[in-house]
Length: 168
Image 1 (cartoon, rainbow, N blue to C red):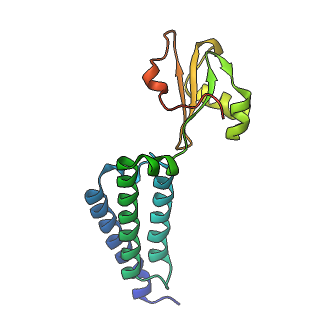
Image 2 (image 1 turned 30 degrees about the vertical axis):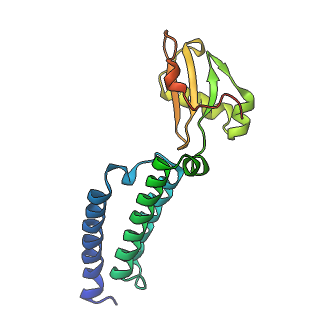
Image 3 (image 1 turned 90 degrees about the vertical axis):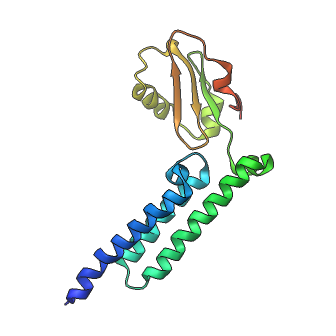
């Protein structure tokens, strides 16, 4: 049968870990939980895993959890700096966005390359409130895995498609 200490410690550890997480985010900035690059999502998942391990595991102590969180924030900050200051590092770490549709036409080869099904694409079009395929100017599979749907009756400014590959 668990003791009172066994029942109270997860609350204390959760409190300390959440406060530490908030402090690290304040130090590291808004990007901490973004999905701007592939590594951002992986770091966010790892942070949640560390927090959960400390709170529910009897083997991962508070000190180790805090150290692990700090390490993830340091690595994320380092990678973000590399990406912003060294083009080769950004090219190595980032996937270029891929065009899935252009001017109402589905680019089947690009769908296959991105491993996106036609039904996945159609679902994203519905989410974006597209009523006619002809109103879709561009659908971009972003480097983060998000899908951006640009639609309407005007042409897309070229700057919005900078860096987007139109073929695999």
